[in-house]
Image 1 (tube, rainbow, N blue to C red):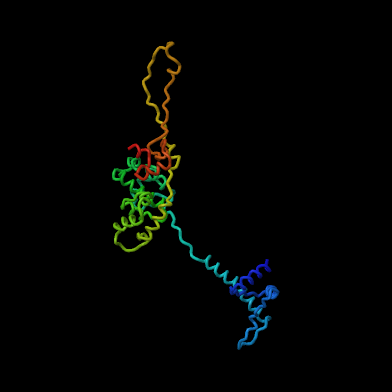
Image 2: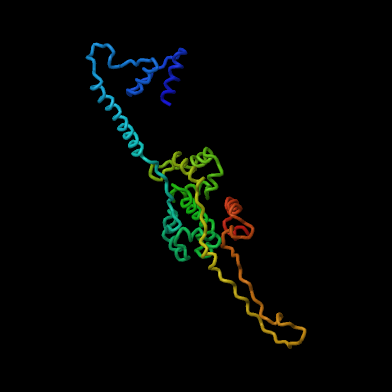
Amino acid sequence: RTQAAIETLISVANKGQQILFFTCHLHLTRLFEQQGQPPVWLTEESSTQETRSPVTSQPQVQSELQLQPAFKTETSTAVLDAPQVEVPVYELEWSSPIYRLSSLSQFQIQQLNQAGINSIAQFLSQSADQLAPQLPEEISAGLIFEWQSQARLASCIRGIKPQQAAFLVQCGITEPGDITGMSFPELWSLIASSLPTDTLNETTITETRVQQWYQSAHQARKFHPQKPVATEQKPQQPVPQERREYRRDSSHTDSENTKPITPPFYLNRSMPVEQAPSIGPKTAQRLEKVGIFSVSDFLE
């Protein structure tokens, strides 16, 4: 194959194409000599400097070859040492305590704890209408919905702190779908028009930070209520009725004399709307975009 390659190069050169072939291998130079192409030795060129012998030039060639692996090693090391892009984290987890919500006062936290709400998961598992009767009158269903919206934004979208989530709710953004449903210029215009002119701090909302939220909202995670919450509802007991005595005759069958059984409710109002018949995950997502999260919201 080497001989054929040399013949090809010579054939192309004979047609007028200039070819410069550099090699440090002696056997290749001999193959060119056999084809009538004597090599030109670079060490024999005339110059004012002293003529270097092949013996002294060989270490220089080796030293040049040895520099190449060292250069590659430095390049690969530089790539490995490059700073990695920091990935934002979820500021709230499902197991985070309810007091992590910055909008809650100590009194409101105590009232929620007394109602059995201690974590973000428990807070999002119930609708605002279901929680309102268990709390004082000053804690309305609308106020609870705002708190739940803050918890949902901070726990479903990376990088949004509870304080920042409270500001987004004031702008009318209550769920990740509100962010993904508009373009970034529309989102930033909505937020920028409501930004306060206070001093800079770690929670300051900037255009770069909103751009990060916009990207994270397209990869937002979804909250799924715990199944034990749906099984806590006990079937209602039948209302005791006044017994009637009658004479048994052949016109009555045994099935008519048995005590009626009241079937349990397999769907209660606090369950997620996704568990309702004929409603799948995709339909539930569309319903959640319009504020329907539970069966109670859907029926109303």
